[in-house]
Length: 329
Image 1 (cartoon, helix red, strand yellow):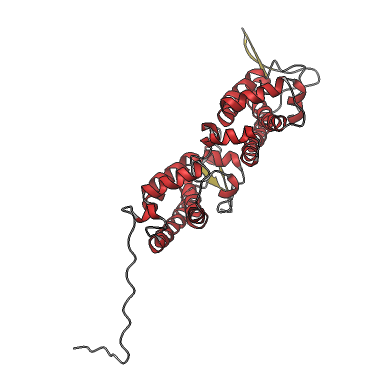
Image 2: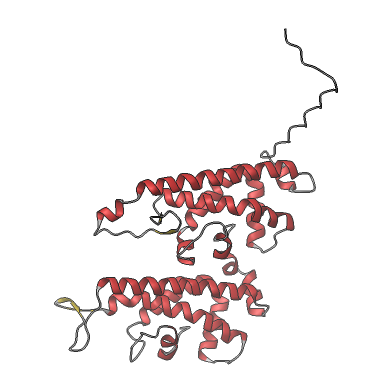
């Protein structure tokens, strides 16, 4: 495993009061397989496994291992928390309790789970940023690999870029939940403005880190703000997201089957916020089309210019001759 000893776990989760890793080892294996391996890829994962067994303190590999161990410990502990509260025997499920300790209330367990999950997913984002920035051969090879491009399938690859346009109080945890709606917004909404050839060009350049300067400007000034608004509109409409009572924040929806009134409340506000986000997104798309139609040529935005999405701008109106007057019959 990438996290081989109890001391490493307790470094990142101070409340892990264990005598060994036995109780949490299944969760460590699950998180490593489901979260870390897809991010790292087989080659980098193997290199970090080697570092875990034969440390090279101070090396790039050691720093990357440390960055991978943080989310591994936090997410595994969050996953294991419910099972740590109980034991199962032939007589059923029992709550753990001693003369000096008792099982925490459910809301305390849920709060700690959410906090650890938020921190763990944020740490995965930090691991990716570290790999993106490093000039070490391990990171360079990772960026060229399938795993190194897996998080670049959408036009937004960083939470920080998204929150320039829409605040996400939940950070990466909420961003990850929006990915499916982001893909739909790209494929069903954005493509109407850019045409499929230009959208494919943008996706390829983002995935391979080869954005041209004109496409970078296109993303920052038009595509990203449109895509952020349209993503939120779809997320709100599908109840993946909700807004605060003031309407100023967007967070991941919390399904609470024990309180139906809470689940039903605020639907009108959510509908209004979704409509406002949709209108904002459509306005950005209109600005995008106007910009592309005005700027596209055989040498600039050539993919768009050659596509059926391109519409030649109307010629300027001819100036009226001096002294001319209109006559009505």
